[in-house]
Image 1 (spheres, one colour):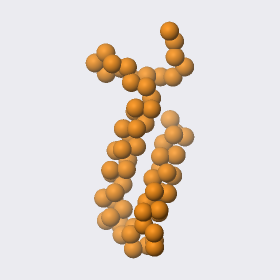
Image 2 (image 1 turned 90 degrees about the vertical axis):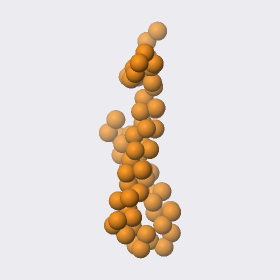
Image 3 (image 1 turned 45 degrees about the vertical axis):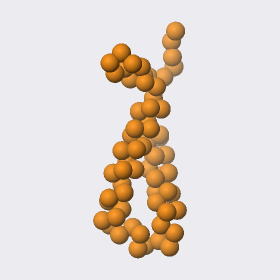
Image 4 (image 1 turned 60 degrees about the horizontal axis):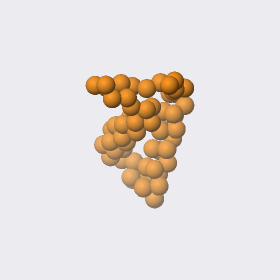
Length: 67
């Protein structure tokens, strides 16, 4: 059985690409939070949660385009 996507095999377990993307997204989001706090991201916008969500969507969208 062949697949059209590349998979990652760790310890004999095959992971589909979306698992890799989910882990990368989690790492990016957890890495961006302290950086946004240090830069003072909250003081710039009136609705910080919407601004953060928009930034995460842009970064993750870029990740999908690069992959």
